[in-house]
Image (tube, rainbow, N blue to C red; front, top):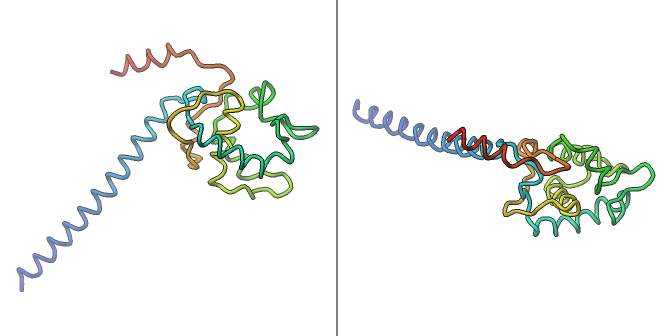
Length: 169
C-alpha cells in the first residue's frame, strides 16, 4: 500500500514539476521578448511589415477615413494622422499610447468600436504613410509591448544604440 502511495506522490510531483517547467519556460520566453523590445525601439526600427500596412489601409478606410479623410490629413476638428502636426503631437509617446487612444475613443461617433485586432494594422498603415521603414515583424495587439516602441519624428542617433550594445557585451 505504501509503495502505491509513494508512486502516486512521485507521479504527482513529476506532473507539477513538468507543469511548472512549462509555465516557467513560457514566462522566460515572454521576458526575453520584452527584453528584446525594451532596448528602446522606435518607429524607425522597422516595427511593422508592408503586408500589415496594406491590410491596415483597408481597415483605415473602413474605420477612420470618414473623419481623418483618405489623405489622413484630418479636417476642422479632426487631427491629421500624417505629417508634421501628427508627429509633433505624438513624438515622445509610444505606439501603445496611440493604440489605446484608438481603442478607447475612436471613432468619435462610436468610441471603442474599432476591433482590437485591427488596430495594429491601422497603426502600420499610418506609420507607412508617414514614411517610417518597414521591417520583418508585424506589430502586435499587445498594448504593453507597443508601449516599448517610441514615436520619434526624427531618426535617433544610431551610435548611441551601438555604444550601449558594446558596453553590455
